[in-house]
Length: 191
Image 1 (cartoon, helix red, strand yellow):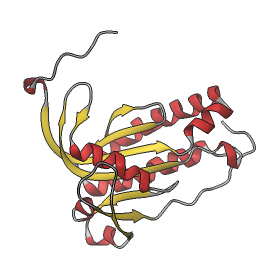
Image 2 (cartoon, helix red, strand yellow):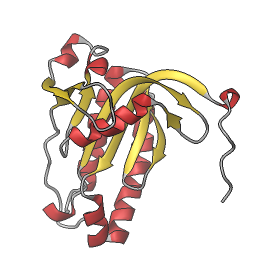
Image 3 (cartoon, helix red, strand yellow):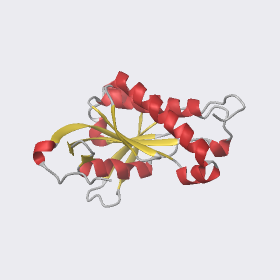
C-alpha cells in the first residue's frame, strides 16, 4: 500500500462547512453477533446514504467501517440530512430483532478545516468527533455555533443540553439535542 504524499498546502484547501459525524452504537457487539450480516447491512446503508446526500449537497468524506464523516454547506440541509440518515438506518432495521438493530448517533458542528484528497483535518473535525460521545442512539447533537446558523423555526426543535467538557477540547462546548426519530417495526426477516 502506497503512503500518501507529505502534507502540501498547494494540494489542500481550507474551507468552512458543517461537519457531521455518525457511528453505529455497539458496532463491535453487532459485528461479533453476525459479521457478514452487519457488513452487508452497513454497506447498503452507506450506498443509500451516499445517494440521499446529493439532495442536500452533502458529501461523504470517509467511512470508518462503522461510521461516516460528512460535509454540508448549509445548516438546514445538514439537519434535514441527519434525519434522512436516521430514517435510512431505521428502514434497514425492519424485520430485525431488538438486539440486531443498527442504531446511529450523529453529531454536527460548523468549523473551518483543511481538506485534501485523503481526509479533512482541524480542531473542528476533532470537536465534532468528540461531540458524538454525547449523542444517544437515534439522536443528533449539535453545537451552539451550528445552532446559530439555523432558522428560528428549526431552533424550536432543539433541546438545550448544557455545556459539556469534551475530551481533549480545551473549552467547554454548548450542546443542543435534536429529538430522535421514532423507531418503527417491520417484516419478520432482518435484511
